[in-house]
Every structure is written in C-alpha cells, then in structure tokens.
Length: 241
Image (cartoon, rainbow, N blue to C red):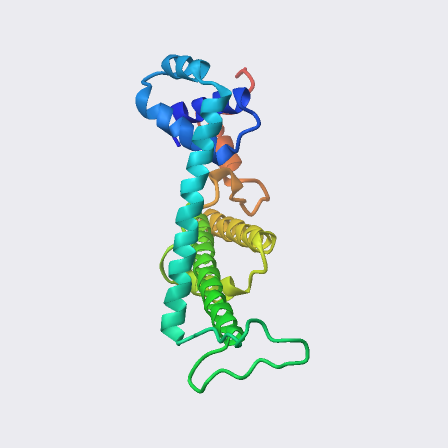
C-alpha cells in the first residue's frame, strides 16, 4: 500500500470510525486511483456520507463472502472427488436416538478419515515451512560469521577449518541468544589470534641500537657516544714550564 492510500485510509477511519477496516481499505484504494494528491483525496473523503460508505463496505463484504464461500465449496468438492468421499444419509432424515449410522460402503472414506487426511496435509505444509525458515535462519547466521572472518582477515586453511566448524554447530543453536553468545566467543578468539600475530611480528624485528649492552655493562649506543667524545676532545694537560 503506497503512502497516498495509507493517508486516505487514515482519513476514512477518522471520519467513519464504525466501519470495517477491510472495507475502508478497499475504498481508500479506489479513491487513490482517482486522486493524484492528498488534497484531492481529502476533498473526495469530505464529500462522502456515512450512508454511501456503509453501502460500499456492505457490497464489498457481500462480494468477498460470496467468493470465499465459492472457494471453500470448490475445495471441498475437490477433496470429495480426490478421496471418493460421499455423505451417507439415513432414510427419513437423521438417525433416531439409539440407532447407529451404518458403515460407509467399501472403498468410500468417512468424514473422520477425510479430516485426518486434511490434518496430515496441513502438518506436512507446516513442517515444510518450518524447514525453509530454519534454512533461511542458518544462512543468515553464516553470513554474520563470515563477516567476522572477513573483518579479522582470516584466510586460507584456517578460514576453511573455522567454516567447517561453524557448519557443524549451526543446527544446534537453540535461539538467537544462543547464537549471539557463540558469536561473542568467536570474536574473542579472533582478537586473541590477532594479538598473537602482532606479538610474533614484534619478535622478528632487531632490537634497538641502544638496547645492545657491552661487556662493561653499558649500552652499545652509550659506549659509542663516549668514544666519539674522547676522540674529538683530547684530555686537558697542564702548561709547560
């Protein structure tokens, strides 16, 4: 539903609060087809009377109910043809108290059997829907996990190993809280890996010059500085007599 239709529906609900929303929604859509702006639509709504709106809603509900009834009847007839179900009527109308309904002829299904078949079909539909929803949830969670690996620049065999590990545990998450807890643990592991790599990088660098120590117990840099000063400034001596 576009913004104009939503605005028209709000106007109709405010003016005709007692009418059914589904009927007013259809009326809003109809007005939206004939009004280019909210100003035009407001003018149309202002000219409507309660009787006109009530008649529109009743006509809409009548058509809708007829279509629903027709669809239900078509569905029921389809089930009867599919499962060869026929209602068995007792001569003279409903059976009297104490009388039993005779069993259906061989090959025909009873009403209870039809209901059981419908329950099984609905169960299969629900299970299929739950399976699709679970697959979508797993795919979304895997995308979040991969994003963590991308941010940490995890590549090669290590990346493949972590993805295989995730695919094994993904079906075991009870809910979003359980998954988020796992993701936090993964982030902590990735931070630890990054720190280890940083430490190894620092160990590969040479020590600073002033960190080297001579046998006299002073740093090599200090020793070189003292030597250079001694070469450039000879020791002072007394005046010759």
